[in-house]
Image (cartoon, rainbow, N blue to C red):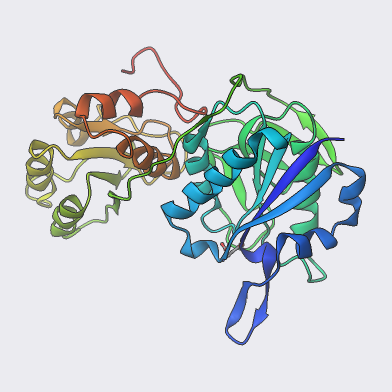
Length: 335
Ligand code: ASP
């Protein structure tokens, strides 16, 4: 029987009503008591890493989660991490960078409704997650939610209430799970040994452009961070002089060695910033990068991981454009 370590972090799946609304109260052991069928599927031990609403997640929590997995890696065949759904996509991406090439599965799941209410997705999500983690061919970091298996770098929460809360952005789902049966579409290659990383920078900022934006916000973000992601419109562009002072501020920041990444607010298909005049000049600037088909969640956490080990611009650029955990599709025309 496969040995799986369940890691509890809080979220709705562990929540109960309080005077002030739902808050995490249940331990992983409490949660397991709701799914007795699990004992016929795999051997499970449980560990509480933290007990928070995932709104409160910090990069330090991701380091704790990765450290718990590293500490117990050799003793288990796989890991199921229970997490709030709100920032689950960020955590899945962060763990994809902190634990690379894992031949063992690190499955992240949660629920839109607490486990101890009558109508809940918690039990089916958990049973699917354990089934996938114990299946023998799952590997690397994935989210298992509502019967979908999504690579950790590709997930996004797209529904705030319904059970089908997550989708895979610019990448196919890896498998479907129905009534505990796994329909595996893709088995991704994985490494022989995992590589664990132990540092993340928190000096990464994100600005979503709006028409008429006060460009001083961009200056403030560059002051406080080593890298700023600009979520632009469509395939990507920067408001030109006469519209907003973004370009002047951007050039001053890039000249000081700051990193800028241009991405898009559009959910699917990614950036292509050379296409329009408004984006064309961006990439000839030093330290200016493009997200292509990477999700914003992946870009944020990839930069945190890169800047945790280097600030050398050429190395930041090289690592940013190196596909990791299927976060970036390479095309011939790309760097
Ligand atoms: N606010 C909760 C959280 O992210 C929502 C959930 O888990 O569904 O922790």
